[in-house]
Length: 355
Ligand code: SAH
Ligand code: SF4
Image (tube, rainbow, N blue to C red; front, side):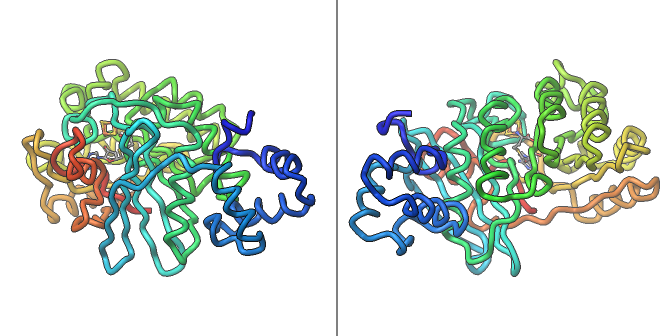
């Protein structure tokens, strides 16, 4: 890597060591820099073990890849959302959710998304480009800089389909695990059901948590919500999830956006339960009330319907939780901030995010 290609969070430990060596700095400087960036998780300007002049020189030599376009906070400062711009102007969203003891970051894997799920603001706006591993990792570090609590969980539930950008995503996961010290099980990859990507993930060394966005137990209905279902129908997706669970010994989560009068009946619950009963390591269903978006005619199922749905799953031993929304007041759902800033996404957005 030439010096021109170096970035703050793309540079490896060897890159930083070589850079400081070329500058004639003593060896322990590389350790101080590395430790500050990755172990202490400090922004460069706060690594005061390095002299101010050296920090300034490093700031030039190791540019960040994301610049701030917009930022909001809500829930008494416990939820924070950023809209970043990449070098080319691509818009990227990140959400930080702080809890008393630790924090979760929801990150984007692509600017936009090509999957076109009809109820999702990101999907409605279309695909812009893939993010690099560095852009993915930088989102986590930048969010950590705004959190007193240690970021312990990372979820790929922001913009984009992570398994459609699988090499960059796996590269980012490796760095989050090795260099930032996150446990693999605390990294969740959420997919709409890209079966080849799920198989690739099953052969990846790290046992990350897999979440599968199902949303319907019947193919004709899922086709209408998730166009990718025509290519990879429910049986194929559930089968790939089953293989993942068996290979990794990890419980898989299934996400289900509850839409009033559309997929929230007890018949739907029974059909979903039938598909997931006896799932290896036990399936977990995450029920999330639909976030309304301008281009989708549908509203959230009522709390009572969602509770009855959950009870129906639990009755046959399928574990279910109801996800509460965070950050609604600051448009924390993905796609929303971008939309406010004049991007192409409209309406409310995709994820209701929780750890
Ligand atoms: N592309 C991946 C990850 C990003 S979306 C995926 O689809 O899984 C993260 C989660 O938010 C997914 O479960 C997605 O289905 C859900 N989601 C998208 N739009 C939503 C909306 N309007 N209301 C509720 N959940 C939504
Ligand atoms: Fe893409 Fe996920 Fe939105 Fe579908 S739900 S369009 S896969 S981000």
